[in-house]
Length: 412
Image (cartoon, rainbow, N blue to C red; front, side, top):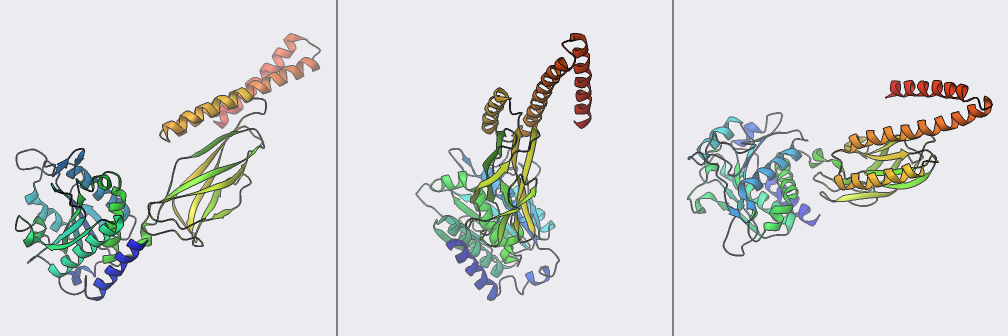
């Protein structure tokens, strides 16, 4: 939270002193939707028919990191009232670095950022950003570079190596120079000293970039608010049995969730649960929250029942629904209950990829068990009614069984 506040204060100061106001950016600011261009560093034809990987350190390859971060930044920005483009979305054999300026300029961007990683033989760590000198809009480029470097560095509490002019680069200039928008080349971190961050925190690198870009074009950050359901809650019940379940959501937006503003709302089949549950704590972007006391009372009817929940901010639903799956088996089907519980343990290990397919198989198993128990009960009842006449008992029970089968097929 502290780093977010610091970054936002810097953005506010730069806006007040004229960033994105006046000069060449003024005409673009009149367009209905800002256009944001992200350039994943490297991944282009190197001129000899091979893909340029950028810097490589152990298992870390620059082009893979930059493309992943760019895609995830696009994912966050695409929820908002902006147009966002990548210069390439995979290894591009058809273009070289010399073609990038034409690609960027053809998109008529409001802002453009080229994403890279740094490399060093020393223990150097941190984030830095390069701005144009003698380019399209050097003032806005320098301001954007300063905000991006600060935003990424604050996100991870790593050194902010600052905004640097492209003329200080060993190459004497950078390919962002020809881009017709305030443009920055952002070095996220160092492949060596910051390796673990670059390996595991790419979503948060994307969050830092998205915050800065949205704030820089005056788009509220809550546009990216999103809840992602983590895992699934599933249990086997006997009819009318009561249990407590848990639902976990990830804050996959850019801002913290605050208690009093957000609540978890039941959207389907309460099964005895309240209509809504309050947010129990502040949840920072990238963190998870669990409601661990969600009641569910199984219906009398055997089968698979779903209790659904969704996070709301006021009257607005956010992101994924979370589902509590209540599997109800007949009271006498103890062996079936144990068998299904074993399968559920396997499902949890496999994840959600084949969940629906497995649930359908379980549903069929439960219905088979219900039919078997009902047929046994009917056979016993008819046996008593018909005085032990086996032919009559078999005919009567068979007719009922066929009717049940027909009804089941019509319901499937």
